[in-house]
Length: 373
Image (cartoon, rainbow, N blue to C red; front, side, top):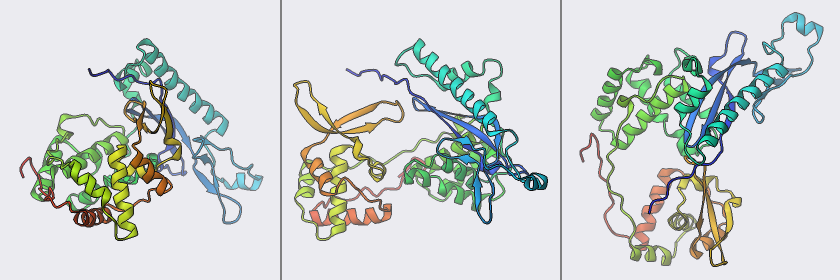
């Protein structure tokens, strides 16, 4: 029997500077980003701050604290500096921070109110927006930063999501590169249904895989969301038709376990492969593995077993998955540290391991583009 998902009463509200939208005085608008239940909301806070200014000598004085996400007052200016017009915030840091705190409280209180009306149910973005902006929902849309290239918008998105896995942050770089060669003058806010269709045909002409095209269209949607523009149009959705996955068979897993690696790097990759197999962890999650995610899970019969805590980003729930002895042994062998490797490096090593361990089945190396093999 499938159990319905129970959502948590948890929302993350953060503030980021839109550095690509600096005005002539060097001040930047502050954007609020809220994330909950797999949803994301970005709105213009209405505040403008000065990120930094020249300090004493060659130093730079920071006027925005990245950790607390609040404006800093900075040092007291001398009369000579005031006369010279040394830049500062349009308003005092105290007033700016008070308004930011009030906005954060409004969003959090509204979310909590909606959650309490239907406990453990998902709070949709549309419902939260309607509650926050009952008169004019369009006021929640951040002003479009005109003339920004795809790369500039995606770099801004990276800056606001710098804690994501490296592979996630790099995922849309190919889109920016492709746009620079396809239509250098095209800007994200100029993408229409006609342009999207032409771009899709361009990628198909280049025989790009369906999976790649899906990533490109996902990048376009990210750019529109970053600019506060609608991004849920049907013509911006691309369905990838992937080749069937080749799972390891039980006998192949046994061969992988008993194989004796011939070098340190192959031993590392074989163990990483097995650890992923027995723990359910993606490769990018191992890069930022935290020892605190290891817990002891109490079973109904009173016994305790080692387990791994998985953060479920879409639901906000944590799932504890028992660790088989072999995964526990691998983790201890490597001190629970799994160094980051490039995908090209990993693919080469995995092929060497497969050949050495006697995994001789053919690779699933088909290219699917436009729904055809």
